[in-house]
Image (tube, rainbow, N blue to C red):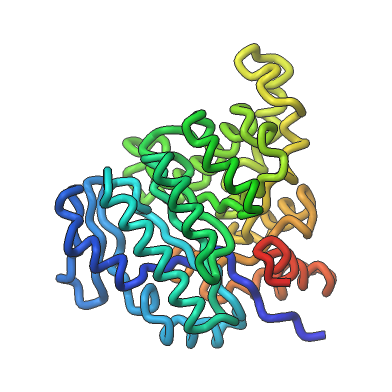
Amino acid sequence: MTPPLGIDIHAHFFPESFLRLIEQEGGAAGARLDRSNPNGPAIVTAAGATPPLSPAYWDLDVRLKAMNRTGVGVQALSLTVPMVYFASGGLGRRLAQAFNDGLAQAHTAFPDRFVGCAALPMQDPNAAVAELERAARLPGVRAVYLGTNVNGRELSDPAFAPVFERCQEYEVPVFLHPIGVVGSARLAPFYLTNLLGNPFDTAVAAAHLVFGGVLDRFPRLQVCLAHAGGAFPYLFGRLQHGQRVRAEVRNRARRPVSAYLRRFTYDTISHSPEALRYLIGLVGPDRVMVGSDFCFDMGYERPRDIVTKRLGLKAADQARILRGNAARLLGLA
């Protein structure tokens, strides 16, 4: 039995209209588009710069060739760092709109190959709700994509509750991606801001959603954790022990932490078959989906291979992880 083409739930995208808006108006927020590198433009903000964005990040034809080469049938397109949180006021809203309109255009051009995860101006929760209501009606938008914090504000902040309420109401899943990671000063050497910071920031965000009561308040909210859940699936026992012995977390969630593991879904980006086997055994093959981190160097060049060649899974479980789970979550089944 030939494994199905994959649905890649973790694939980054920078529409040209989004890049142009930063180039034209980003200066008001201390941002600019640096076109000096022949490999592609880079977005520069006060927090740092993206790598040069090669054409694969914004040229759909280049992207499709890569997808065809690696057996990916559909990508769920998402923004990534710096998101739109660096821009206050109207610019943040316009950046989110430009990105989301770019998602809709990509889907319209190739409806069988691309769906989108909308960006929201979470630095202004009221504007985020308004943009969610607009973006949810755009063709191809099937999810939203949020940072693990918003300029240092945790996702359990009550100000964000209306966003999660709308996501639950519209049955729109939320995908989380690290941004502004914890411990950035100590993690500066050796690229540890990414290698360690990203997975730990995901764990921090997941813990806030659990202990901050977000998952209890919104029981039908679907949340996907990037990078195989970061550190969260591997530290849940420590968090759960804390529930029993520490007053700071006792009674802060209705159930033990282990009961929330399957409230999340997870991508496959672990870079370790051993770790991915552990995750699948912990949460079940119905809660894990293929991701590539396209097309950053910290992702998978051939995202299907770890599922089809390195885990020893049954064909049915391979099919769930490659396509079935994401198709169900994104309404593509």
